[in-house]
Length: 340
Image (cartoon, rainbow, N blue to C red; front, side):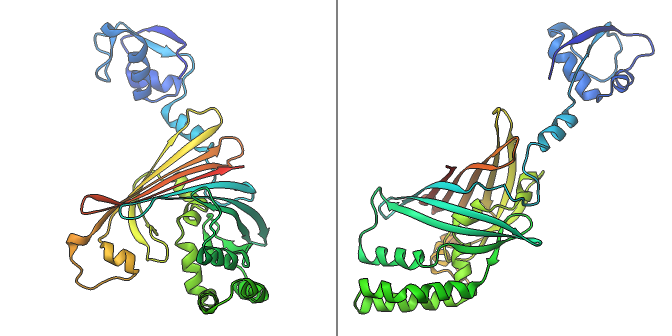
Protein backbone atom coordinates (compact mmCIF):
# COMPACT_ATOMS: atom_id res chain seq x y z
CA UNK A 1 0.00 0.00 0.00
CA UNK A 2 1.20 3.53 -0.82
CA UNK A 3 1.08 5.86 2.19
CA UNK A 4 0.45 9.25 0.55
CA UNK A 5 -2.51 10.83 2.38
CA UNK A 6 -4.42 13.96 3.28
CA UNK A 7 -5.56 14.90 6.77
CA UNK A 8 -9.35 15.25 6.61
CA UNK A 9 -11.11 17.22 9.36
CA UNK A 10 -14.17 15.25 10.44
CA UNK A 11 -17.46 17.07 9.83
CA UNK A 12 -20.62 16.50 11.90
CA UNK A 13 -22.30 14.52 9.11
CA UNK A 14 -19.24 12.37 8.36
CA UNK A 15 -19.11 8.67 9.08
CA UNK A 16 -16.47 6.10 8.31
CA UNK A 17 -18.76 4.49 5.75
CA UNK A 18 -19.61 7.78 3.99
CA UNK A 19 -15.94 8.79 3.71
CA UNK A 20 -14.98 5.30 2.48
CA UNK A 21 -17.78 5.40 -0.10
CA UNK A 22 -16.60 8.77 -1.43
CA UNK A 23 -13.10 7.45 -2.09
CA UNK A 24 -14.28 3.99 -3.24
CA UNK A 25 -12.64 1.76 -0.66
CA UNK A 26 -14.02 -0.38 2.16
CA UNK A 27 -14.54 0.88 5.71
CA UNK A 28 -12.05 -1.71 6.93
CA UNK A 29 -9.37 -0.59 4.45
CA UNK A 30 -9.88 3.06 5.46
CA UNK A 31 -9.70 2.28 9.17
CA UNK A 32 -6.62 0.10 8.68
CA UNK A 33 -4.87 2.81 6.63
CA UNK A 34 -5.63 5.49 9.23
CA UNK A 35 -4.42 3.33 12.12
CA UNK A 36 -1.19 2.44 10.32
CA UNK A 37 -0.27 6.08 9.75
CA UNK A 38 -1.81 8.19 12.54
CA UNK A 39 0.38 7.34 15.53
CA UNK A 40 -0.62 5.69 18.79
CA UNK A 41 -2.91 8.43 20.18
CA UNK A 42 -5.40 8.79 17.32
CA UNK A 43 -6.31 5.24 16.37
CA UNK A 44 -9.83 4.16 15.42
CA UNK A 45 -11.12 1.20 17.40
CA UNK A 46 -14.74 1.28 16.21
CA UNK A 47 -16.37 2.28 12.96
CA UNK A 48 -18.06 5.46 14.18
CA UNK A 49 -16.21 8.79 14.28
CA UNK A 50 -17.66 10.17 17.50
CA UNK A 51 -14.99 12.29 19.23
CA UNK A 52 -12.59 11.96 16.28
CA UNK A 53 -11.12 15.29 15.06
CA UNK A 54 -9.45 14.07 11.87
CA UNK A 55 -8.99 11.00 9.75
CA UNK A 56 -6.16 10.22 7.34
CA UNK A 57 -7.43 9.58 3.81
CA UNK A 58 -5.12 7.87 1.31
CA UNK A 59 -4.58 9.66 -1.95
CA UNK A 60 -3.85 6.33 -3.56
CA UNK A 61 -4.72 3.00 -1.98
CA UNK A 62 -5.07 -0.47 -3.47
CA UNK A 63 -7.91 -2.11 -1.58
CA UNK A 64 -7.51 -5.62 -0.27
CA UNK A 65 -10.08 -6.88 -2.75
CA UNK A 66 -8.38 -5.16 -5.69
CA UNK A 67 -4.98 -6.40 -4.53
CA UNK A 68 -6.29 -9.99 -4.54
CA UNK A 69 -7.64 -9.53 -8.06
CA UNK A 70 -4.27 -8.20 -9.22
CA UNK A 71 -2.47 -11.13 -7.60
CA UNK A 72 -4.90 -13.59 -9.17
CA UNK A 73 -3.81 -12.36 -12.60
CA UNK A 74 -0.22 -13.35 -11.78
CA UNK A 75 -1.17 -17.04 -11.42
CA UNK A 76 -1.34 -19.65 -14.18
CA UNK A 77 -4.91 -19.90 -15.53
CA UNK A 78 -7.06 -22.88 -14.48
CA UNK A 79 -6.99 -24.25 -18.05
CA UNK A 80 -3.81 -25.83 -19.38
CA UNK A 81 -1.96 -23.81 -22.02
CA UNK A 82 0.76 -24.76 -24.48
CA UNK A 83 3.70 -22.96 -22.85
CA UNK A 84 3.02 -23.84 -19.20
CA UNK A 85 5.90 -26.33 -19.22
CA UNK A 86 9.42 -25.68 -20.40
CA UNK A 87 11.08 -28.18 -22.73
CA UNK A 88 13.71 -29.41 -20.28
CA UNK A 89 13.87 -30.01 -16.53
CA UNK A 90 16.48 -31.41 -14.15
CA UNK A 91 15.28 -33.66 -11.34
CA UNK A 92 16.82 -34.44 -7.97
CA UNK A 93 14.99 -37.19 -6.09
CA UNK A 94 15.85 -38.28 -2.55
CA UNK A 95 14.53 -41.18 -0.45
CA UNK A 96 15.15 -41.41 3.27
CA UNK A 97 13.92 -44.69 4.73
CA UNK A 98 13.95 -45.94 8.30
CA UNK A 99 15.38 -49.40 7.63
CA UNK A 100 17.13 -48.97 4.26
CA UNK A 101 20.03 -47.04 2.82
CA UNK A 102 19.15 -43.53 1.69
CA UNK A 103 18.91 -43.15 -2.07
CA UNK A 104 19.49 -40.17 -4.34
CA UNK A 105 18.54 -40.10 -8.03
CA UNK A 106 19.37 -37.45 -10.60
CA UNK A 107 18.04 -37.35 -14.15
CA UNK A 108 16.83 -35.13 -16.97
CA UNK A 109 13.36 -34.81 -18.48
CA UNK A 110 12.65 -33.66 -22.03
CA UNK A 111 9.10 -32.54 -22.76
CA UNK A 112 7.48 -32.04 -26.12
CA UNK A 113 3.98 -30.59 -25.65
CA UNK A 114 1.72 -30.41 -28.69
CA UNK A 115 -1.82 -29.24 -29.20
CA UNK A 116 -4.06 -31.44 -31.32
CA UNK A 117 -7.65 -30.37 -31.88
CA UNK A 118 -9.09 -30.02 -28.37
CA UNK A 119 -6.39 -32.06 -26.62
CA UNK A 120 -2.81 -31.56 -25.50
CA UNK A 121 -0.26 -34.33 -25.95
CA UNK A 122 2.92 -34.63 -23.89
CA UNK A 123 5.89 -36.67 -25.10
CA UNK A 124 8.12 -37.42 -22.11
CA UNK A 125 11.70 -38.66 -22.26
CA UNK A 126 13.67 -39.48 -19.10
CA UNK A 127 17.46 -39.73 -19.54
CA UNK A 128 20.90 -39.51 -17.88
CA UNK A 129 19.79 -41.23 -14.67
CA UNK A 130 22.30 -41.64 -11.87
CA UNK A 131 21.85 -43.36 -8.52
CA UNK A 132 23.89 -42.00 -5.62
CA UNK A 133 25.97 -40.04 -8.15
CA UNK A 134 26.83 -43.09 -10.29
CA UNK A 135 25.25 -44.79 -13.29
CA UNK A 136 23.48 -47.95 -12.03
CA UNK A 137 25.70 -50.87 -13.07
CA UNK A 138 24.11 -53.91 -11.42
CA UNK A 139 22.47 -56.25 -13.92
CA UNK A 140 18.85 -55.88 -12.76
CA UNK A 141 18.94 -52.07 -12.63
CA UNK A 142 20.70 -51.84 -16.00
CA UNK A 143 18.17 -54.18 -17.59
CA UNK A 144 15.26 -52.22 -16.13
CA UNK A 145 16.70 -48.99 -17.53
CA UNK A 146 17.18 -50.51 -20.98
CA UNK A 147 13.58 -51.71 -21.01
CA UNK A 148 12.27 -48.26 -20.15
CA UNK A 149 14.61 -46.60 -22.65
CA UNK A 150 13.03 -48.71 -25.38
CA UNK A 151 9.67 -47.04 -24.65
CA UNK A 152 10.79 -43.41 -24.51
CA UNK A 153 9.51 -40.97 -25.44
CA UNK A 154 6.16 -41.98 -23.93
CA UNK A 155 3.16 -39.96 -25.12
CA UNK A 156 0.30 -39.00 -22.82
CA UNK A 157 -2.96 -37.16 -23.24
CA UNK A 158 -3.24 -34.13 -20.95
CA UNK A 159 -6.58 -33.09 -19.48
CA UNK A 160 -7.96 -29.57 -19.95
CA UNK A 161 -6.69 -28.68 -16.46
CA UNK A 162 -3.20 -30.12 -16.98
CA UNK A 163 -3.19 -33.61 -15.44
CA UNK A 164 -1.96 -36.74 -17.21
CA UNK A 165 -5.15 -38.46 -18.38
CA UNK A 166 -4.13 -41.55 -20.37
CA UNK A 167 -1.57 -42.98 -22.75
CA UNK A 168 -1.64 -41.79 -26.32
CA UNK A 169 -1.43 -44.83 -28.66
CA UNK A 170 -0.67 -47.42 -25.98
CA UNK A 171 -0.16 -50.15 -28.62
CA UNK A 172 2.79 -48.17 -29.96
CA UNK A 173 4.64 -48.75 -26.66
CA UNK A 174 4.38 -52.52 -27.06
CA UNK A 175 5.58 -52.27 -30.66
CA UNK A 176 8.60 -50.17 -29.66
CA UNK A 177 9.59 -52.66 -26.95
CA UNK A 178 9.24 -55.65 -29.27
CA UNK A 179 11.39 -53.87 -31.88
CA UNK A 180 14.20 -53.47 -29.32
CA UNK A 181 13.79 -56.72 -27.41
CA UNK A 182 16.18 -58.82 -29.52
CA UNK A 183 18.96 -56.27 -29.07
CA UNK A 184 18.37 -56.23 -25.33
CA UNK A 185 18.38 -60.04 -25.14
CA UNK A 186 21.65 -60.19 -27.07
CA UNK A 187 23.32 -58.23 -24.27
CA UNK A 188 21.39 -59.46 -21.22
CA UNK A 189 21.51 -63.24 -21.54
CA UNK A 190 20.29 -65.92 -19.16
CA UNK A 191 17.04 -67.18 -17.69
CA UNK A 192 16.74 -64.37 -15.12
CA UNK A 193 16.96 -61.71 -17.82
CA UNK A 194 14.50 -63.58 -20.04
CA UNK A 195 12.03 -63.88 -17.17
CA UNK A 196 12.36 -60.15 -16.43
CA UNK A 197 11.77 -59.26 -20.09
CA UNK A 198 8.68 -61.48 -20.22
CA UNK A 199 7.31 -59.87 -17.07
CA UNK A 200 8.04 -56.39 -18.40
CA UNK A 201 6.27 -57.11 -21.68
CA UNK A 202 3.30 -58.52 -19.81
CA UNK A 203 3.14 -55.42 -17.60
CA UNK A 204 3.23 -52.88 -20.42
CA UNK A 205 0.69 -54.89 -22.41
CA UNK A 206 -1.91 -54.37 -19.69
CA UNK A 207 -2.75 -50.73 -20.39
CA UNK A 208 -4.69 -50.15 -17.16
CA UNK A 209 -1.98 -51.68 -14.99
CA UNK A 210 0.91 -49.94 -16.75
CA UNK A 211 -0.81 -46.56 -16.73
CA UNK A 212 -1.40 -46.90 -12.98
CA UNK A 213 2.31 -47.60 -12.57
CA UNK A 214 3.19 -44.37 -14.33
CA UNK A 215 0.34 -42.35 -12.81
CA UNK A 216 1.28 -43.40 -9.27
CA UNK A 217 4.77 -41.97 -9.68
CA UNK A 218 4.93 -38.81 -7.55
CA UNK A 219 7.00 -37.14 -10.27
CA UNK A 220 4.13 -37.18 -12.78
CA UNK A 221 1.54 -36.18 -10.20
CA UNK A 222 3.35 -32.97 -9.34
CA UNK A 223 4.94 -32.18 -12.72
CA UNK A 224 1.47 -32.23 -14.27
CA UNK A 225 -0.70 -30.61 -11.59
CA UNK A 226 -4.36 -29.77 -11.80
CA UNK A 227 -4.09 -26.04 -12.55
CA UNK A 228 -7.28 -25.46 -10.57
CA UNK A 229 -5.15 -26.15 -7.46
CA UNK A 230 -3.58 -22.71 -7.91
CA UNK A 231 -6.97 -21.04 -7.48
CA UNK A 232 -8.33 -22.92 -4.45
CA UNK A 233 -9.63 -20.56 -1.73
CA UNK A 234 -10.49 -23.11 0.94
CA UNK A 235 -9.57 -26.62 2.07
CA UNK A 236 -10.33 -29.35 -0.45
CA UNK A 237 -10.02 -33.14 -0.73
CA UNK A 238 -7.82 -34.79 -3.36
CA UNK A 239 -6.70 -38.37 -4.06
CA UNK A 240 -2.92 -38.77 -4.21
CA UNK A 241 -0.52 -41.70 -4.65
CA UNK A 242 2.25 -41.69 -2.05
CA UNK A 243 3.59 -45.15 -2.92
CA UNK A 244 4.25 -46.25 -6.49
CA UNK A 245 1.98 -49.09 -7.72
CA UNK A 246 -0.18 -48.77 -4.60
CA UNK A 247 -3.62 -47.13 -4.37
CA UNK A 248 -4.44 -43.42 -4.04
CA UNK A 249 -5.31 -41.99 -0.63
CA UNK A 250 -7.46 -38.99 0.22
CA UNK A 251 -5.69 -35.92 1.54
CA UNK A 252 -7.04 -32.65 2.86
CA UNK A 253 -5.22 -29.82 1.07
CA UNK A 254 -4.79 -26.08 1.57
CA UNK A 255 -3.20 -23.59 -0.83
CA UNK A 256 -1.36 -20.36 -0.09
CA UNK A 257 0.58 -17.97 -2.30
CA UNK A 258 3.56 -15.70 -1.80
CA UNK A 259 4.07 -12.76 -4.19
CA UNK A 260 7.13 -11.07 -2.67
CA UNK A 261 9.59 -12.21 -5.34
CA UNK A 262 9.85 -9.76 -8.23
CA UNK A 263 9.67 -12.48 -10.90
CA UNK A 264 8.03 -15.57 -9.41
CA UNK A 265 4.89 -16.55 -7.54
CA UNK A 266 5.29 -19.32 -4.96
CA UNK A 267 2.19 -21.50 -4.62
CA UNK A 268 2.43 -23.81 -1.62
CA UNK A 269 0.07 -26.74 -1.18
CA UNK A 270 0.00 -28.68 2.08
CA UNK A 271 -1.95 -31.91 2.41
CA UNK A 272 -2.58 -34.18 5.39
CA UNK A 273 -3.88 -37.75 5.14
CA UNK A 274 -7.61 -37.81 5.85
CA UNK A 275 -8.46 -41.51 5.61
CA UNK A 276 -7.30 -44.64 7.40
CA UNK A 277 -4.54 -46.73 5.85
CA UNK A 278 -2.14 -49.17 7.47
CA UNK A 279 1.50 -49.54 6.54
CA UNK A 280 0.84 -53.15 5.55
CA UNK A 281 -1.96 -52.10 3.18
CA UNK A 282 0.24 -49.44 1.60
CA UNK A 283 3.13 -51.83 0.99
CA UNK A 284 0.98 -54.77 -0.14
CA UNK A 285 -0.92 -52.37 -2.45
CA UNK A 286 -4.34 -53.71 -1.41
CA UNK A 287 -6.95 -52.96 1.24
CA UNK A 288 -7.13 -55.50 4.09
CA UNK A 289 -10.46 -56.22 5.77
CA UNK A 290 -10.59 -55.57 9.54
CA UNK A 291 -7.07 -54.16 9.58
CA UNK A 292 -5.81 -53.08 13.03
CA UNK A 293 -5.97 -49.26 13.27
CA UNK A 294 -2.84 -49.32 15.44
CA UNK A 295 -0.91 -50.02 12.24
CA UNK A 296 -2.27 -46.89 10.53
CA UNK A 297 0.11 -44.41 9.02
CA UNK A 298 0.15 -40.62 9.09
CA UNK A 299 1.29 -38.75 6.00
CA UNK A 300 1.90 -35.18 4.86
CA UNK A 301 2.49 -33.74 1.40
CA UNK A 302 4.09 -30.33 0.79
CA UNK A 303 4.41 -29.06 -2.78
CA UNK A 304 5.86 -25.67 -3.72
CA UNK A 305 5.36 -24.40 -7.26
CA UNK A 306 7.34 -21.44 -8.60
CA UNK A 307 5.72 -19.88 -11.68
CA UNK A 308 6.60 -16.80 -13.69
CA UNK A 309 4.52 -13.68 -12.98
CA UNK A 310 4.70 -12.63 -16.62
CA UNK A 311 4.57 -15.85 -18.71
CA UNK A 312 2.86 -18.05 -16.04
CA UNK A 313 5.33 -20.83 -16.92
CA UNK A 314 6.41 -23.51 -14.46
CA UNK A 315 9.96 -22.69 -13.39
CA UNK A 316 10.57 -24.97 -10.41
CA UNK A 317 8.90 -27.46 -8.05
CA UNK A 318 9.92 -28.63 -4.59
CA UNK A 319 8.01 -31.41 -2.91
CA UNK A 320 8.21 -33.54 0.19
CA UNK A 321 6.11 -36.59 1.10
CA UNK A 322 6.55 -37.79 4.67
CA UNK A 323 5.09 -41.06 6.02
CA UNK A 324 5.05 -41.85 9.75
CA UNK A 325 4.25 -45.18 11.38
CA UNK A 326 3.78 -45.48 15.13
CA UNK A 327 5.13 -41.92 15.57
CA UNK A 328 8.37 -42.69 13.75
CA UNK A 329 9.37 -41.49 10.31
CA UNK A 330 9.04 -44.45 7.95
CA UNK A 331 9.89 -42.70 4.70
CA UNK A 332 10.71 -39.23 3.41
CA UNK A 333 10.59 -38.62 -0.34
CA UNK A 334 11.85 -35.29 -1.65
CA UNK A 335 11.80 -34.01 -5.23
CA UNK A 336 13.24 -30.88 -6.78
CA UNK A 337 12.40 -30.19 -10.42
CA UNK A 338 14.18 -27.26 -12.01
CA UNK A 339 13.82 -25.76 -15.47
CA UNK A 340 17.08 -26.00 -17.45
